[in-house]
Image (cartoon, rainbow, N blue to C red; front, side, top):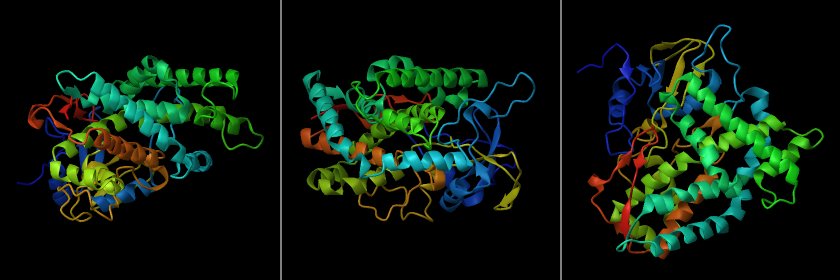
Length: 407
């Protein structure tokens, strides 16, 4: 059966799974570059093979458009574009900001967070055990959901008590493919307004506030330094970027990673008996569980041809890491979970100049979450059949809505 020549829909993961959609296996073989109807009604070229996805992320002919300006609107009523997030910055501006921010998220620089994450994870496990109903608890609500936000707040300097203010806007933007442009702009502007207000509060507090020298304060100090690399707007963009990239994706991936481990008891037992393998296992979980299902919009800045398809300037190009990470040309037996897999050059964090700034923090957080859970609750297991679990499928970041466990 041949693929249709008309637009295809973006493949969807099967209900009750995080993905990746099975349809990508066929696309990798028969149509590695294919025009698709995107959820917002626009069209874009889906790229599904590992080699092509990796190259697309690093291709300077492909740029990430402003969330507030894509799809483009013309005419006098077109709204002014919002500040770019770090993913959308280009050229010298991006290089300047990256030089300042990237070292803050390096492996050694983040070592100070390890004991803090361990303490937070331990407190959450203790609270879950104390509040267990009949010896069971929901691992999502008790652990996978609250931990990433607490880690983000502690690292960046976001007030946890403000979560009811910024989280609704963050969640709206993460589901932006189903929103109108006016709704996207409203959420983005509200998030930028919150970030601006938060920065003003920190400026008034100076360095003596309860937050100490959190990352927002460090970047503010750089923005005020004569000859500094950052502007105040860059600090606003940092806050927005951290919320959009570091919150829901980590909840989704942590929930899915824990479900994968709980449904592979032999491999879970290996990690319990040999915790030194957890860092390698984390990268395999990042490869195996898709962080994103076709939500990476890039725009071509010139015409070029890829696998016989003529991509024109202005066309949307959508590299799909969820497909690339299951490409048999890049990974042996890619649909099998192998927590000892090495090397493991997955593209869960993208590739090239816009690779995820928070990759090391994400790895550290997931590794410690697994370590603490297995240390405190070595007999943990699912308290319900995996196929009966409810799922949150409201955004491309699919995840189990509940994970009932016992120990």
